[in-house]
Amino acid sequence: MKYLKVKNWALMSIAIFCTQLNAQKTDNLVLTPPMGWNSWNTFHTDIDEKMVMETADILVSSGMKDAGYIYLVLDDGWMAMERDNLGNLVPDPKKFPNGIKAVADYVHSKGLKFGMYNCAGTLTCQKYPGTRGYEYQDARNYAAWDVDFLKYDWCNTAGINAKEAYTTMSDALKKTGKPIVFSICEWGVNKPWEWGEGVGQLWRTTEDIYQIFDSVHDEGTWNSLSVMHIADLQSNLRKYSGPGHWNDPDMLEVGNGMTYNEDKAHFSLWSIMAAPLIAGNDIRKMSKQTLEILTNKDVLDIDQDPLGIQGFRYLDKDGLQVWCKPLKNGDWAICFINRKTESKSISFDWSKENIVDTIFKYTLDNKNTYNLFDVWRKKNVGTTAKMLNETIEPHGVLMYRLRKV
Image (cartoon, rainbow, N blue to C red):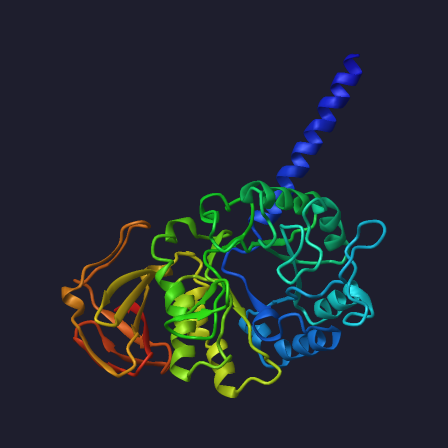
């Protein structure tokens, strides 16, 4: 009996150790906001093996992979309409004739990571099989296919508790022993920022984005949101975000039909908010201009700053917003956004501004002088010893990295 007790204790200790080890693996997955590409914004369910492989190729050849875009994520529509007789998800044989594992292997051969989609409900948003009741079975299949990232949606979930549903799937993924980034796509309905840390590595904070700058888009029974509308909804959430657990204001619409100024403003805002940067355009056909926005190293460095602090809106007046973000080594990022449809002149006296991060306790000391580096024009433009006088184009942006002289 004593032997059995010792044996049981040893087995229990091993199980606890393995659980803790798996938790550590997932806790360290995305210490900076994840970057990658997702099929939904451009392709919806019109996806297939050829498109995925071509996208993987372009992620590498364009320089996006080297810039940090490493997750290639297949959204809704990759599976057949029915599970097989064992209850397993089945890839659509027309779209993916060689199966998902072959696609994942190809993506991995390019030095990228592979991601997939499913839903906490009985069906996905596009009426494919959901995961409700199959969490552990689906998680085992994802691990067997060598999936690195799971986006988990919230359609067809009547009567389901969000925290419990996402925790169940999170536990199922951890149980596989394979580190898989878990993206909670619950649209902010049940305040996932309050319970998401430790369950997933990122959580959506709003309804879906649409390629418009400052309005809403009527989807019939609901509205998708513009860039600025989503940004407005982030202001009270920053305390929940940080290394390994990120607020997710949805995927990027850069290159999907907005103006050049709007694309730059969108990318600047997402970077200063330490948002996951998941491109959503057809990168096989993108312009040089779009590629330059997505791979601007100086802007990406602000998003990927190791402090992991989500920026805050310091000023919002007469169509002008000023966003601020503390960075490593005492640097700051400052972003001026013009929401108006006409140009706007600004005068900003650094010596009279008291910029304080009251949550993470950083202060931009206006008694010190900082060099101003314009991250879009890629040049030094003076210091904070002089008042900033600039004109911002309609829906345009000025963004600076400040470094103490």
